[in-house]
Image 1 (cartoon, rainbow, N blue to C red):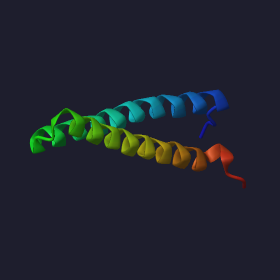
Image 2 (image 1 turned 90 degrees about the vertical axis):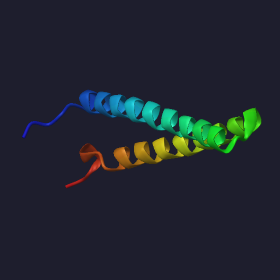
Image 3 (image 1 turned 180 degrees about the vertical axis):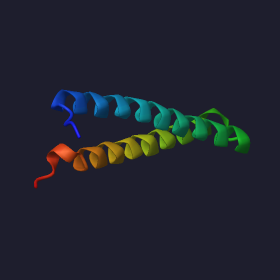
Length: 78
């Protein structure tokens, strides 16, 4: 099994992080918008739920990045 270079690992982690971050944050904000529209909360209610979704999305992305860095095979000692 060939070892991946540190630059390749960083690029892989960076690419995965950008992809997952964009999808997670967009889905969280869109979910807040949809729930506010369904419940008829108006503009301010939609803004509040979108902001809450943004916070949840950022939290989820942060957890992903921390887990990915923690479980990187290059960081493990023999």
